[in-house]
Length: 223
Image (cartoon, rainbow, N blue to C red; front, side, top):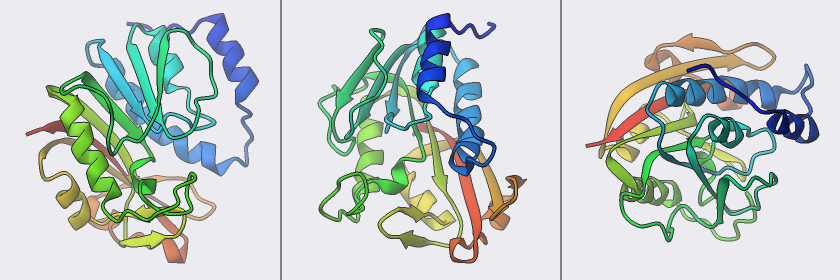
């Protein structure tokens, strides 16, 4: 099915998104957004949750709305776009009010690594298991035959306070021990260069402290 975007959506894009050639944050998101959108558009339309949807350049909910999805979002910050077709919930993904098996699909773009870190997004208390609690809750509210899409920093294990965690392979395997890995892609880049697709072993050597960044793009299903 060809992707159709309405004039209203384009106006929203022009109003809220400023694309600059030197905007590395947006460049980094491009590879993550492309992964999520391409995988979702290959699946049957359904009810979907965007975890951590309040990101200045996040247009995925608008794209999915225009493509016939039932789109929901949850974040501790208010969502900046007003769209009657998008259902936003102000809340915490570690513990939600959603019923069991509520969604066909869930995705979280560069979100999991922030959950439970004090000083990030108005979090005032550290929760070392915040990310694990979030993954457990996402499994609860995802239908048994559903799909979870996750993008996270990957490489030498570290916590860059108050910004984010960087996960290594052992942590990823532990976090998602109750999930089947349907697809796993890994990328690295040095500061000032473009992303390069590599093996998991190569990506695990990416050292954030040395200006080498790693990224894991994961497609999962509950066991």
